[in-house]
Length: 269
Image: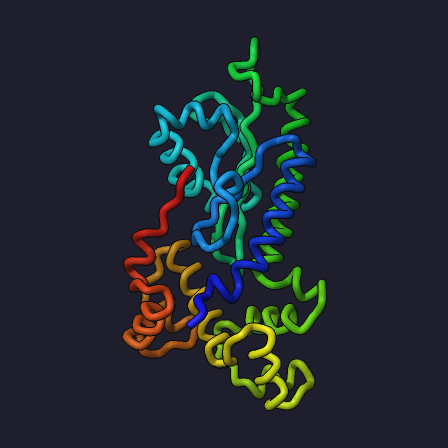
């Protein structure tokens, strides 16, 4: 069986990597994305704080970085949809903006570090903020990038860009909490049921029922790492009336149980 990563992650990861690199060039800051699901295939430099100034500090104080960025900042941003500008424990200034996918807290865009203090730069690689407006401008920039990233992960960007694959993904995204028969997708695409079934197999390499199951498991994984809803409620929200059956499907798909997946949903700063 192809995993959810095989079916969806490659295309998303390529677009998101381009987006992150563009954000970095335009802002003049190092930009990375903390993916709370750990599904995107991004290089480590775009998944963690890999700026030279941060790397030096991590050699002796990595646990402090993890506590601040992956625990405290993620917790605080759950109530700050527009993100914030903050100073880390080592006096570096950075920008952090949450990314929501279908109203689920999916991850955080970090831009920085930079130096907004007085005196000599503590590290020659640091960018010095010209003034407070310079930082505010980059917060607005990261908010716009967060919205585009959200659109990619929800399938809204693909829907605009066109193509059968994009149309199918966008449709599944809208219907992920419902029972979706092949006939409904066929009607949406204005194709026969037989042709739609063949099209799904051609485009994704797996049959339609497996595609729907993969998409639902993906949503389940997002919910498991983003909130504290009981597994039974998550299952019900995705159309699974039997929690035990949902658990078996999830475990077969991800090679671990929903509870184990939730416990392992940790990040690296």
